[in-house]
Amino acid sequence: MKTFKLTLVFLLFACLSFANVSNSEKQALIALYNQTNGAQWTNSWDLDASIDTWHGVTIIDSKVVSLNLSFNNLQGQIPSEIGQLSNLQVLNLSFNKLNGKLPESISKLQELYSLQLFLNRLEGHIPNWIGSLSNLEFLALHSNKFTGKIPEEISNLKNLKKLELGSNFLEGNIPYSIKNLKNLQILSLIDNQLDGEIPESIVELTNLEELVLSSNNLTGSLPFELSQLSKLTLLMVSDNQLNNDYVTVVDDAPTKVTLFLEDEEMASKN
Image (cartoon, rainbow, N blue to C red; front, side, top):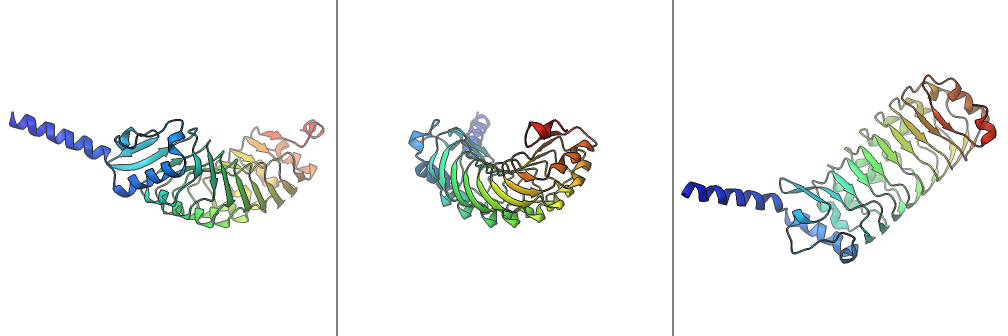
């Protein structure tokens, strides 16, 4: 009987240990709740309940490893306390009404491999410190109000597979250093104010499957070497100021590429 009681105590302790997180992490979650009108969330939190019952919070070994509050009516700004979630691997706050700038404290989340903040009202420049999140594989900041240039530091994200920055107000050139993202599979910069020529270095992205550059102010021609990217299956470059001769890039491609052209007349040439 004594052994049985001890076993029950141990199991109860283990369950409580799993549910509990550090006070620092708990305060970070509460700060997010308070600064984004948590009482009006679609799926709100009972702050008196165990954290492992809170919508969108995933806990492993008493650590918050994932926070997914997409489609949840968050309104307000991301608090600086978010940086206290030092074990976070996934942060998804997409499809909400967040505004303001990205807090620099996000740079402390060195375990992050997925950062999804798209379809909000975030503004300001995409910060240089984004390049310090070395484990990122998925970065989605599209459909916000970001301005300024694409920071060169993004090229430090050597593990990045998806980079989605479309539907903002970004300007300037596509960084030549984009070539450093050797694992990149999807690059979407659609619907910005980017100008200049498409850098030839982009042809070094040999794992690229989708290249989406439509609705910018890009000039010149597509690098011919794009036709040698065997994994490229989607190429969107319409609504730019590119030369017509870029059509031949696809004509000679070794694999089938879906190409979205400037207009029906150009499409008929393909």
